[in-house]
Amino acid sequence: MFGKILNVLDKILTFLEEWTLFIAVMVALVALFVNVVLRYGFHYNLAWSEELVREVIIYTTFIGLGVAIKNGSMIKIDALVQLVPVLKTPLSYFSHAATLVFATMMLYYGWTMAALQAATYQKTIIMQIPLVYLYAIIPVMGATMFIRTIQVLYRDIMARREARTAE
Image (cartoon, rainbow, N blue to C red; front, side):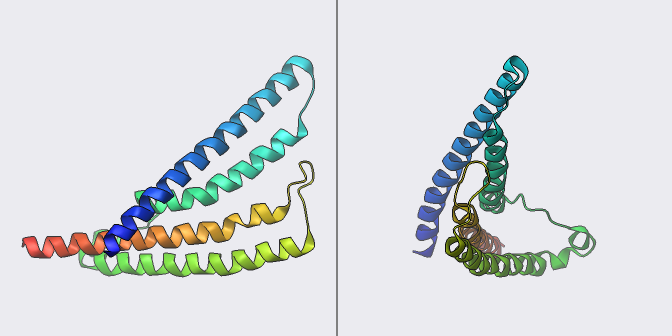
């Protein structure tokens, strides 16, 4: 039952992550391309395109964290695991626990920061986007990190159980 729920969540998150990342990157690429053509072809500069690209980089970085956890692409130092292979399982669980703690902190503090931005009505300089929209990505990132880490942890536990029963 829990595995089915995680599979449905995985499909929903994968769809949302892939499409939002694709659309955000394509919008930034088009804006940057148009800006380059205008700058060098017509000596005219679009200041908003640089701000848009900066915001898209921030957005894709935070959304990409969930994708990196799902794909096992997070940066790891595995020298100790290579020296002492017995520690692979405990260190893997420790890594998952640390990621869950970090994701929880991002949920809490990201929510707090977004609430502060909503209270102060701050906006970006050129495009006048309310900063609450940009800061809201932090708790969303924390939630996707948390869900993805639970998915990977569940997958690891099931794989270890299957390996034990196969022996």
